[in-house]
Amino acid sequence: MAFPPVRRAIVSVSDKSNLAEFARGLSAKGVEIFSTGGTRAFLEKEGIAVRDVAQYTGFPEMMDGRVKTLHPKIYGGILCRHDHAEDMRALDEHGILTFELVVVNLYPFAATVAKPGVTEAEAIENIDIGGPSMVRAAAKNFAFTTIATSPRQYPEILEQITQSGGTTLDLRKRLAAEAFAHTAHYDRAIAEYFAGQTAEGPFPSTATLTYVRKEVLRYGENPHQAAALYACPESRPGNVVSAQQLHGKELSYNNLLDMESALAIVRGFTEPAAAVIKHNNPCGAAVDESLCEALRKALAGDPVSAFGSVLAVNRVVDLATAEVLCEPGLFVEAIVAPDFEPQALEALTTRPKWKANVRLMKVGAIDSPEPWAYRFLEGGMLMQEADVLPDPESQWRVVTQAAPTEEQLRELRFAWAIVRHIKSNAIAVCKNRMLLGAGAGQMSRVDSTEIAVKKAGDRAAGAVLASDAFFPFPDSVELAAKSGIAALIQPGGSRADDDVIAACNRLGLSMVFTGRRHFKH
Image (cartoon, rainbow, N blue to C red; front, side, top):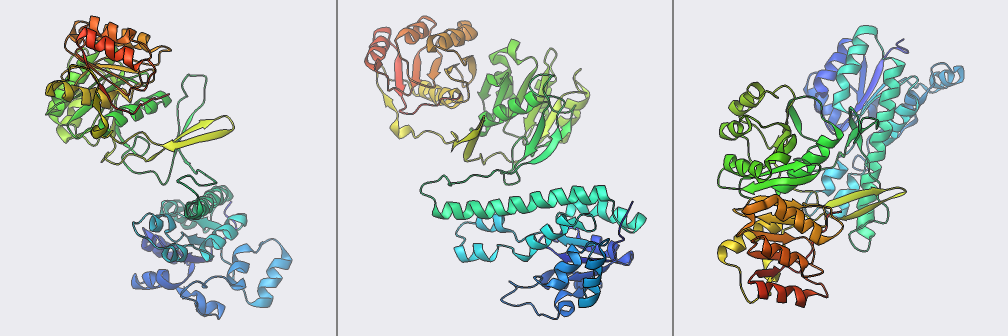
C-alpha cells in the first residue's frame, strides 16, 4: 500500500547525476519541489519548477551557506507522523507543510580530503550539517517519509510514485536502512580524518570500516558455509571486487580469493606478466616481451596444477593471448585482466569447451595497489602497511665468493618478486623469468625447498632459488645445489648465516642477501 501520497519533496544534493530526469518526473506527477542554493539553480536551469526553501521558511541562507535548512518548517514537515492528530494540529498552527520525499546526498568530504594539499579549513567546510540531519530525520520517519540518498535509487522511487502516487512501506524501510548506512559512512570518514590529524604515527586511535553488500555468493569456502561479498566504497579501482564480469557463471568465494592473489602478482610487473593461481598459491608465473608468451610460460610452469586454475594478466587480452587459452586440454575457472579486445572476447566465449562457465573479469587499470592490509581476528582486527613496494636493490649484498652473472641477477629479481606472493615458508625456483616450482606453507623451509625443486625437476639445472625468509640451516642450500640451482636470494639474518654462506662457497653457488623478508601468512 502506498501511504501517504507524495505531495512535496525537498531536494538538496551535491551529486546531481540523473537529478534533472528524476525531478522532471516528479513534477509531471504533481509533486511540488523545494530546494536550496546550487541545487535550486540547477533545477531552474533545467526548466523545472522549484520553490526556494529560504522563501518558504522566511529565513535567508546565511554564514556562507552553513545555515540553510536547519528550521522547524523543514524538520516539522519531514518528521510529522501523519496518523498523530497532535502532530498534524502543530503543522496547521505553525503553517508547516509536509514533505513526503527527501532527496539529499552530502558534501563530498572524502573526495575533498583525498586531494593533495587540502587544507584543514577546506576539509571543515565540506562537513555537511543540514544534509545528514535531513537524511536522519527522513529515515527515522520512514513510516511516512521516503528518503533518497543516491541517484541509483531514483528510478524505483519514481516508478512507484508514477504508478500509485506514493511509495510502499517496504521501499521506505529499505531506503531508511541505506540512509543510516550512508550517514554512518560519512561520519566515519570525518572521524578518521580528524583521528589522522591528531594521531601519533599512521594508525588512528579508532578504525571503523564500512562495507556495502555487493552480492550473496553461492556458498563459502565449502558448500555448507553461507557467504557474501562486500565492497569498500573508498577502495581504489582496479580490484576484483569492483571488476566487471563480462562472461561466465557466478563467482564463488574461492574464485575471489584466487583472483585477488593472481592480480597481486601481475600488478607488480611493468613487463607483460601472467600468473596462475591454484588454492591461493602461484603454480605458474612469468614475464616476457609479449603477453601471449608470458601466459604460455606461466601455464607451462606446472601444467598439471594449472588445470582448473585462476589466471591474471597485466595487459589487455589480445587475440594471440586468447589463442593460447583456447588450446586443447586447458581448463581455467577465471581470467582477470585490465580488459579484453573484442576478438579475444569472442574467441574465449565461443571456442573452448568450457566457454559457458569461464569467468572473464575486466578490472581496468591495476597500477595502484591499496597501501593498507587488514586481517580480521575473532574479537578484533590487524592493520598493517601492505607489502606492495619493491625492495631497494641498493641494500642487496652479494655475500658469497661467486657473484651472480648479469643474467642470473635478472632471474633473481624475478624470483624475489614472485616469492613474496607464496605462502610462508616460501621457496620459488625460477628460470627464464618463469616460475618452475613453488614450495608453500610448509612447517620447515627444507620441506618447501624439496617441494619446489621436485616441481621444477630437470629444469632446475641452472635456475635460481628465492626464499622469503632466511635459511636457518645449510640443508636447503645443499638440496638446491644437488638439484642444479646456480644462484640464491634470501633476506639473511640467521644465526647460521656464516654456515649457509660457507655451504654456498663450498658448492660454488652465488647468493644475495636482500636485508628484507616477505612472510605471507
